[in-house]
Image (cartoon, rainbow, N blue to C red; front, side, top):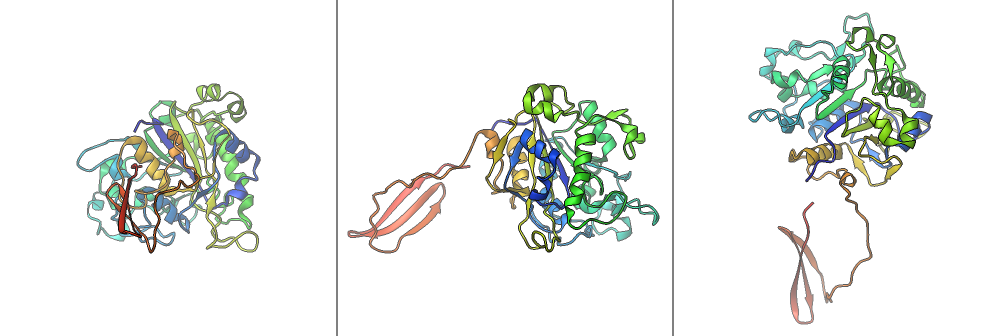
Length: 385
């Protein structure tokens, strides 16, 4: 299968229903300027479970927001991007805004290391300043297969390195970006509290997305920006121009050619009460695809979730699968020009006088049925994929 994109960049935000997000003017504009995924869903609640599922294709037994210790032993997408015994197949990095410097720890070679040696769970952690980095939103740092390998661990970096890679044209083939606890819309800025309803936080994350991430801004005017090597940051994507002249908009942006940008959320509003749903309610989230391979105004109504995004990367880069929920996930086939539609049933020559049985045998569908003359077998070969 041919590649549709040269690289993929996934940006994940926090805890909002799609309907909340679609009320914001900029988020409406972005949906119109890209591919609007109208039926995209988170996998679980609470937050950490979706980050883990988005990387490993399964829940891994995690059901809360406490960073796991000991580290998780299950395989992840990184095992396909960078196999232990083969070396790097697809370049990758996980960019974490506000990520503290964490040199690789030799103690991590043994997953039974003391809990005191585990990676930072939040930062700052000095008991005085409010933390803005949380490991629960960084699944890469919680798997033994990444912790134990220094060549993999070094690929978890901060947002300063992201901007360096963008402006030096070194963005890897697979990139993940987690904004900090305020820019991802989790907490009200400069607090550790959210709002009820959470719709009030959409403007906060949308402002960062429009004016910083997709903008063109003096780096000294943003938090921690004085530490960056770049005097100006932002992907410089003009959404008004994108709606009129996509080719020109992407050409003058800092988004590398052939990059699929995925703007999504981990889950819906997990504790909403009294105004929409509750913890166990539907988990529909806002997701939009951008890139020079995307025609503005596209709308996809087919259901998808985080597992399908793993599968999409696997299909594009020819990686195989992890044999978990990713294996049969509904990947973004429309990017390859494939679609699914129901058609009217075609008549068959089957006239059954009793019960029928249908089974799959290899690439064949086998129908066994009785008619007036006895038992009959009908087979039909179906295509893979």
